[in-house]
Amino acid sequence: MAKGSGKGPRQRQLRVGEQLRHALAEVLGRGDLRDPDLSGAPVTVTEVRISPDLRNATAFVVPLGGGDATAVMAGLRRAAPYLRTRVARLVRLKFAPQLTFRADTSFDYASRIDALLQEPVVAADLGSDPGENGDGA
Image 1 (spheres, rainbow, N blue to C red):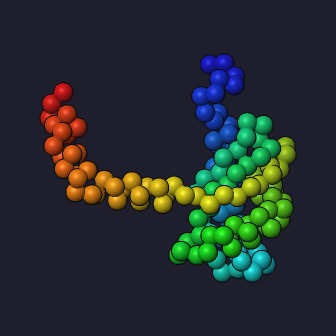
Image 2: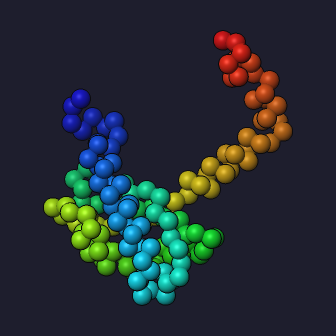
Image 3: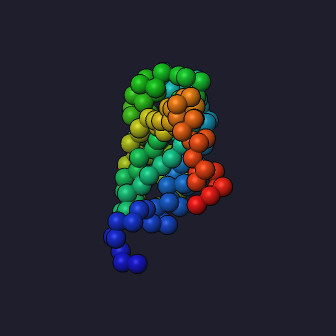
């Protein structure tokens, strides 16, 4: 496979992204951040996507317990330089990646799709197609 073929992230990107996710979760789990928006607010890091040159990373986060996502995101943006330093100590890379944070909306999207699939009209359509159930081809 040729380099830069646009087929998605390389194995190294996935591995480094997962290492960064674990490091961020560890640092955020300690609760030693002094930002008022982050103190006592449990945050889950669901995914970290890193650029091909490993210099920029985007962390997708979700505040647990229905916390104020905008306040948590603002606190994470303010704490990004500190988090970058802490993560660089835990994950050995040539360059410490710049961290940006985004709210993870995949759970909201999944529950919306699930709610749509549970609607009676859609459920009737899904149940009436024998090809979908594996009964016929």
